[in-house]
Image (tube, rainbow, N blue to C red; front, side):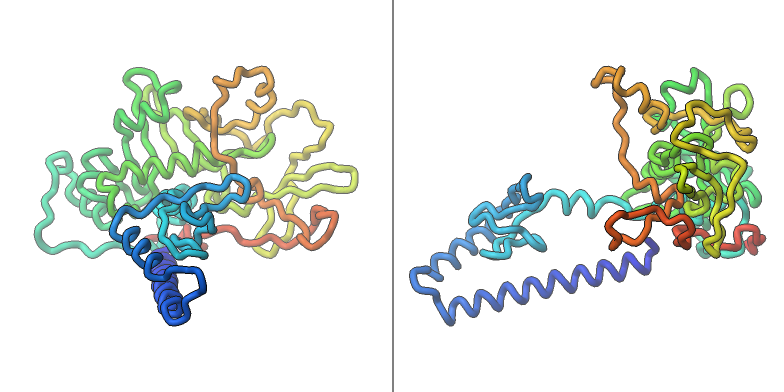
Length: 377
């Protein structure tokens, strides 16, 4: 979600909240003009005033209906207020979701591996730019990092590096290593993480820690590899004796294009793995899969061996799940497999929900088409 869409959504939400307040006041005025028999409007108004003056209560969660309910009349909470008595309530989920990013950091077009001519750069300040001591001999590189969205705190915390052809890399600090690489890295190992061509930090993320964690979670931990023979889009490989590197898979044509891989199945339940081009045409690869397959060798394109980070999802672990003690099972977030595989489901109005063998692919990529263009800056 870009900045313009976020601003539009915020404006729409603010307008909705204002409309709710207006309707709430209108209902109160109508209640005063046309009091209902047996209802003490004055006492209800005083109770509402007492509620507004005190702390706003937290709504009750109804597990059966999966809704939040009012503490006073058990009415359903909509827009932060009960739709029956109009009392305001706090719904915990709203606060949680408001703080979560809605975009996918790992598959943003800013993570492009090649220079682009479309990377928006910040204006270079004419005065007041103080180069840190760690960049004393790399002042031009530091200026490029600042123009591409990095902060001084982030540059110093993760020793950011930038080259025109290679993009931005961060060196993981000890906290990142302990969180993601405890079972892999040995003492003295270092870890480089690819950040792309541009950085966008949240206001509260001053040193970029949340940004880097978001890339690792979206690209490595929770990006599932569905089935055998499918290459991971982000890989973590060893470069030299003590250096690990996490980056988009260089063996893939475009690892950031989520809609590239696709499956088809014929009447004999034979699965065909391939790609779907921009026109929706399916192109079969050399690898085939069927329900009766037991073991297959890796495909010819699987040249790069990637390691698993801590808590990374691996479908091969599912076969051992029944024999694994419950306390040792890693928990990971479930994802929609159609997002990463390009699986296309038939018309939802059909009763049998058959798989379409030749449906047109929907473009799920947010990447630009000019990755190969040379950057002007």
